[in-house]
Amino acid sequence: MYLDSTKKTEIFTQYGQSATDTGSAESQIALFTYRIKHLTEHLKQNHKDYRTARSLTKLVGKRRALLKYLYDRDINRYRAIVKALGLRK
Image 1 (cartoon, rainbow, N blue to C red):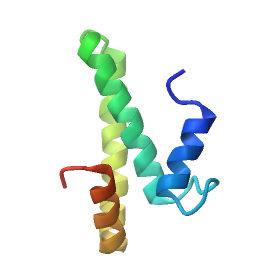
Image 2 (tube, rainbow, N blue to C red):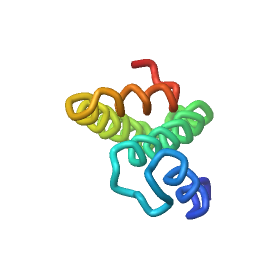
Image 3 (cartoon, rainbow, N blue to C red):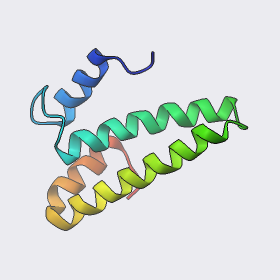
């Protein structure tokens, strides 16, 4: 499995406020980014996997909505997470 509990804890520790901080926008954005990268690599090899393509599109939309929320609420937190994850925004 590509995403086990140790990897999730590592992501939440690095981008959230603690290892159990699963609800903050930063930790969710980081988790979505990790999943998006994994699905992108999968689709490069399996380009006819339409179900995964749809899931990827939905995940990108969720991440975009969270980024917009963070942008509206606190611009400094938004800039920090975009820089830390290397997103293009």
